Image (tube, rainbow, N blue to C red):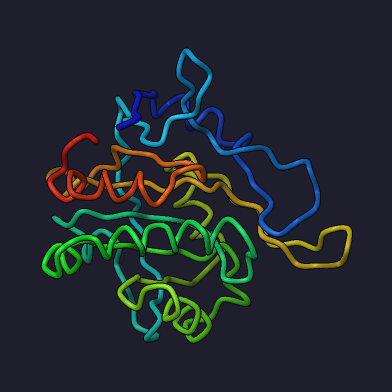
Length: 217
């Protein structure tokens, strides 16, 4: 499996350069942070030598109930992604890739895994909107919404930059955000793996069995 190591501090320092304007024709957004091998190819699994602390994040789930990220995912292998439901490209592709790979696991393993989608566009992504969108991808995914500043602050602790939703040059509302998926270990609850938007179904299919055990891919 393709992998490499990358310092968490370096990811944080580069956070301002990791934005992707989902659904925007503006070319100012750059690709998310991804480690690059000596041959110049991007890597699927970035193994962090300084794992991230899981954000102390309390938001509202698709049932309108309070969801404490640390409490609800403690001891569970967890994939965390920040995106929004109106994104026409990266967000649905990323979530669909994870959902397809997840189905290759046994039912018990699927129940053990936590996949959490935090909206970067909370004004439009209400609990109901998130629930309807995720139902078509994977009903087991936890969808969270809430105060934008709270979400933005939590994302920044993981080196993921998020800008407030804004109008592009065509008048369309877009959310500009980092597109990394962070995997948290069930052993330490720390975020030790990072995936960029180039990660494929095959990458997740190969890696999930090890992520379930807190192992490196």
